[in-house]
Image (cartoon, rainbow, N blue to C red):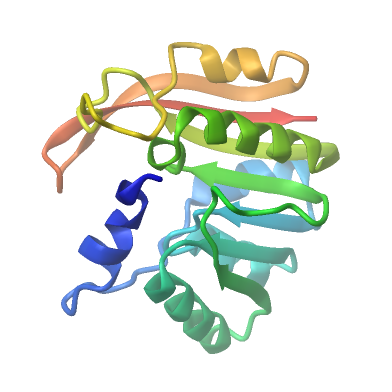
Length: 197
């Protein structure tokens, strides 16, 4: 079992000086709204869940899950402040069981915390539990990313691997790029996908 998955809880969210901003990805929200005006959203490893809070405000039925107790507690407080309804609970993605189908499933920055076997099992479940014409929005780290170490237990994708997994879907956006992380002072290698079932 990967201990790295507790990184954000232990090193970021639980710090006394850490301030939650709940920043939303406005471009992503715009992209979602082009395809969906309502529906059920599942945000896996939601972190601060800024995008999901905004979607909830727009009337989507949102479920947020994360391994971080601190994040989930703060999301619930923020949802109350914004007078929005959403479901948020603490869960380990390696143990998460899908009980229903969703119109949109988001999973960004989670797979490098999950071992290879469990990563592919999770993606299969994401695909299986997406409704017809539903969206999957995934962001993964690629092999050679500076955060990858010899003993990393989480999975780093090969080039085009994520795209190939979705070859039967309508790929609305796919890109592989490098992104400089100022806080970590490193350039991450990322693949980003939006696909429609």
